[in-house]
Length: 260
Image (cartoon, rainbow, N blue to C red):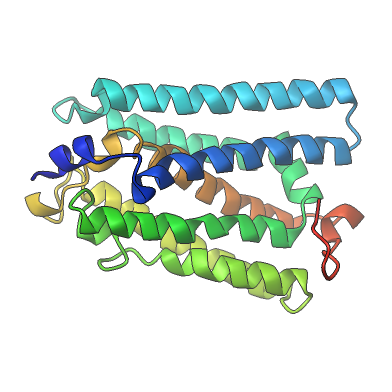
């Protein structure tokens, strides 16, 4: 079975397939929650917070809907076009990541959210990598994009949980977080580069290792939402490390207490 056929026929209702829907939806919900919470912590009025939340919510839903529609219509699989439409998706992901991280919304997220929380969110990359490996085992994804191949981003996801807990407990300094973030960004760049090289645009790894599955729904949300969240999140951590910490952002969760 070809990678195209496997991606088209793979049941989204299965646990690995559902991860490519549930994780993006969770990330979108976390983003919206962060926008609302940090807007209030920044002193914005109720009306201003609602306007910001509405703008962020509409933009998020529109982006997810447009990328899903582009994958469903087959527009992203027009490899004979120059440039191929997938190029615009990559440009869009990078542009949106930078726009979020360095916007006023990004400033509030970096300033008013605890550093440990920003790091901990990147833990979503652990279940994502496990789901991606399952896609490889089922013939949907090329092996070079799994941790059995050349993708080591699973290290970022697993270590994010450890670093977040250590940071919240005061056992991890900002320099260690900075080092972790640099390594995580390099591993992200590595897997994105591999993914691009494996597309039919380049075919660097040959015809048996083609990356076409991300041009089908729901897998299109891997680059459109999850890579975007990973890149924007790591840029936010860099920004948070430079920003003056507010009392709310510096607060550590007390033992046995759930942070709200």
